[in-house]
Image: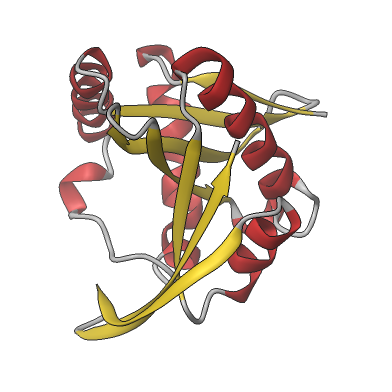
Length: 169
């Protein structure tokens, strides 16, 4: 069993532990965060910013937890366009929890939440072209690869190709 829950200030310490444990793994696929993020205060500031953006209907962040209530990942909804009823999703699963179906299940849960709670009809997601595992998750969830954009994502001092996926929900 996997479930998602909107982040709260009560999650600061556990999220910090999760982020520190997976820092090197995540930096294989996404740009490194500023070092100030990696403290309880940094995580709290990040959550406060998320609350502000959520109140403006711009960004929603959820933690992914397993049946033992372990924090196994995070998933977010952002770039919300109310005129088109569309949004983008992003997700990451901790290294020790990959390959267990958590990413696919959390994407399924966020699809349902976006449709039923936020009124979203179209979801997009982008992956760095080298992240085949993330692309497989999206394909399993019936997202369609709509475009490959050359040199879109700045990462480790270089620009990388991005795969753009889309799904009507």
